[in-house]
Image 1 (tube, rainbow, N blue to C red):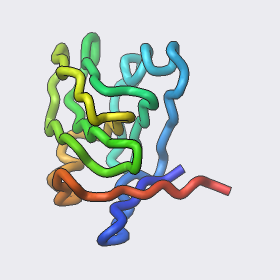
Image 2 (image 1 turned 180 degrees about the horizontal axis):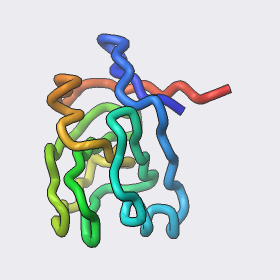
Image 3 (image 1 turned 45 degrees about the vertical axis):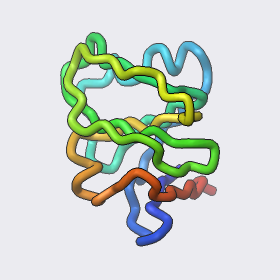
Length: 116
């Protein structure tokens, strides 16, 4: 599956892994050494994240039910924790600096295209 910025059509993540079970969300990116610029982890359902035991910084995109951005956390370093966000239904974790490269803003709409 792929994530796009709806207004611009820009491809944000070409290789997205869905973490939609308790154990997949719990493990998250901990076992990964690095995220490539075209990779992302989509945590669903989720309204907050941590970077315990990770070895690199990530960008975190908080999404509502319609995949509209409700909060952005750039360059979240290892061993940090976000507060839960009431509006958030899922979270997209991407490589650090992805938010600034794509010029994402709160209120922007994202779109999923599933692989065939």
